Amino acid sequence: MPIPGQDQRATRPGLALLALAMGGFAIGTTEFATMSLLPYMAAGLGIDEPTAGHVISAYALGVVVGAPVIAVLAAKVARRTLLVALMAVFAVANGMSALAPDYGTMMAFRFLSGLPHGAYFGVAALVAASLVPPERRAQAVARTMLGLTVATIVGVPLANWMGQALGWRWGLGIVAVLATATAILVQAFVPKGGPPRGASPLRELGALGRRQVWLTLGIGAIGFGGMFAVYTYVANTLMEVTQVAPGVVPVVLCVFGMGMTAGTLAGAWAADRALMPTIGGILLWSAAALALFPLAAGNLWTVSLVVFLIGGGGGLGTALQTRLMDVAGDAQTLAAALNHSAFNAANALGPWLGGMAIAAGWGWTSTGWVGCALALGGFAVWVVSVLDERAVTEVAEAR
Image (cartoon, rainbow, N blue to C red; front, side, top):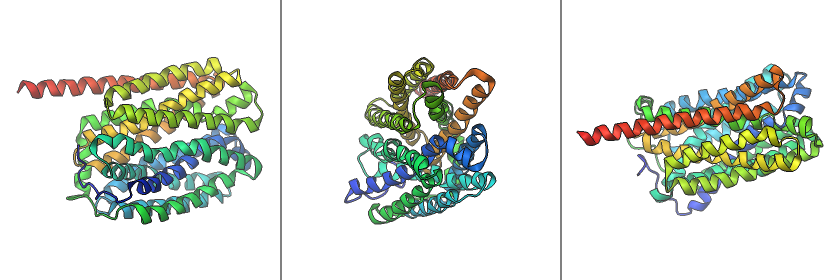
């Protein structure tokens, strides 16, 4: 379906999508690298690792708060202008995070770093979808999201290596450079355009009155939490349970990124053909892979395979982003941004529940069972969404 306020087609859509993906690369690097750097960050700030996990939750809270607030307040701002401004703020906040002297300051700067995240991805997805024919929306969104998945292959292992070799602060500082480069590329290659026709804060708030929008967000907020429950503590699990050398950890993180990239591409292809079945299938895939994690953690080869499979569940992001375009009506920007609020609610929920299981003495691998339960919870919300949509359709046809 056409997207309200659709941008003019870019004369070079490939370069525009690449520019948008660069932002995803910067965001993905800081989001996932922070998790992998937890042991070093905890030591550097003089806190224990469960407490250091709160830094991740602070970032996620920034996303949850920033996405809807920015989407509503910036409803009348041209999308390219908004994207450049968001990346500028992201660059400054990450640069300050790299310089944070203590735990409290780090918490504040990580919260500020999270504020642009959801709005950037939401607006970038809408711009990407506007550059291609409607039947290729999911694949265009996926190309933007590939920046995030490539970050898990290249950016995160690099940041983890830098954290070990040079200090964890370098892993955050490099993100400021990436974000600055994104702002320049977006300004150069994304079509100028104007704000969507008829855009207003009140119209964007209309998304909150749509039941299917809330159900779609619920699928992501719960179902995606499973992946984060495991990923947050995967470095600890590898060193404590699998008992690998620290230098092996970036390699396994790279394997996760490969799985996420494959899942994003395959999921987008499937979503352009059968959107809701794809979402349900990815959730079941994730539940099965997460359930295997505790069984595979004792061996490097088996845990690497399962980590790849867990990464494949990352294809859920593109599918849900496309689903929101269908159910949000003319409140596209807020709904698209809220998708990343939902994912970062999952980013807060998964590590929190996983940390509770570890603190309770159930072991590092217990995060796999926590993750499986969350993926199945997301699938339950998906079932409600399907049944609700079917009921609404039947009532409409009966009239």
